[in-house]
Length: 151
Image (cartoon, rainbow, N blue to C red):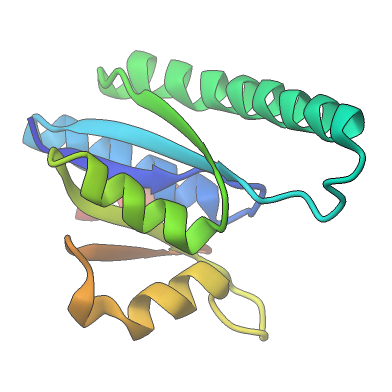
């Protein structure tokens, strides 16, 4: 089964990327994999604190995932998978795509701030010719109604 890979993070535009991935998956008989990346800790010498912070990050990710997963199951009939990785976000996204041959499309939400669409969108679109799958960028301020029409 082909899957849409969508990145779960703390950005506002993540919501539209989740909606788009779920709606496209529902309309095309595909699945959704939600990826969240825990960045490396700056202070590795506090091993005990680092472990606690890592565990808290995982719990926060799982709680956010459950909110999106419930919506996807209830509204779209899609049961998403959760993948949590640790490392640099760009590297982990590319590795997740390479590790799962079912991933057919990477979906990212674009920020609407004047500073640009966000670091992941900027980095991945700049190198889109070398990506292992197509990249879909969803505008962060696109309405839910518009998303429904285009999916």
